[in-house]
Image (cartoon, rainbow, N blue to C red):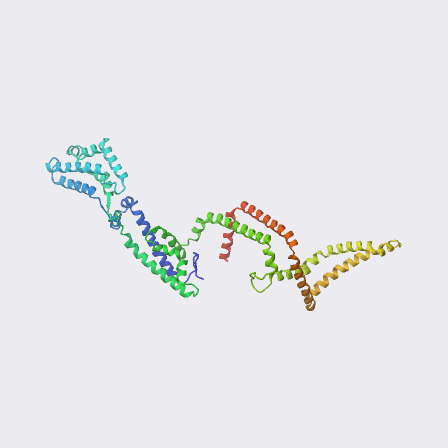
Length: 466
């Protein structure tokens, strides 16, 4: 049967392929996680890995025209101030342009389309704090003025902008949308390579397994590897964590057995406890129903439509085993009790006889009946055991004894079919099962399922160690 569990395989020649597939699957999952996190964590990526902006083209991210134009004007001002005086008319026109663009930014809020309202608010607070004003418009208007640059110095003013304001403006971006108003995302071009690879891998693997196992169709093999189908979904790509985990577990790189044990420990313990309780109660209930309806007796005594395991009559085999147990083990242990019982019975029988009454009147002979009854009881008990044991061991005796037991079983079956007897036994057996069920459920509530799971895990570890 094809391996359908997630158990880690033993070392084999095919492990290099499992390892290769696991590496490809892990790379695909890492790319998916990076793609999903790129937009919300882009600011963090830019802070530590500025070159990461190369991925902007995949997400169709472009510099926002408003904020980028604003930064270009600031760059123009820096270049212009290196070649011209601060009080030049051309410099004044650049300052005026920056003041107007600042008003446009504050009015339009270009950060809104990129969902960066917090960045926009931070930009305003920094400028207000720098200019010691309560209005963002006033602070920008005062900052982009020749008087302020002359007062604090060109280098200090531009240094503040480049260190505190420019990084916030560079975080803003614009994403291209399609004709349906949805953001254009080109990640599917990268992911399609992995989808094609895992599609071919799934088809080849299941085809090979179906050819190897004649009783397994190709479609059934695909269904048994349903989790690999998650690689083929263009949406909900995060679900690929399931097949990736399976492939990593099957490889020799990572042993996820202990991780799975700890992650599923408590849920499995309580789920197993619930399932075992359900199965036991279900089994007892079905047995009770069979006993109360009479199906159990009819199936046992008249097994015409009863499904049997093997050719042996279990009822007859159990009866033979019980008789053998009684003859060779039970009777020797209870022989003293049998002798006492026979002595008592014989004494009672003798006391009721006229012969015993006559002997009681003869001096010196009154004790003889008691001695006779004791010896006779011992003899009968020993003889009974020896006869049964020798008869059961002797070939001819065994045949006779088997004939006796056969008639005994027939008689027992006949008597068990008696309606009155069944009516007497059914409620007793049903009550016994009810007591068993109640006591089992009560114990199940008191037992700690985690302790039971620990014990099962220890047994499993001992088995693997051996």
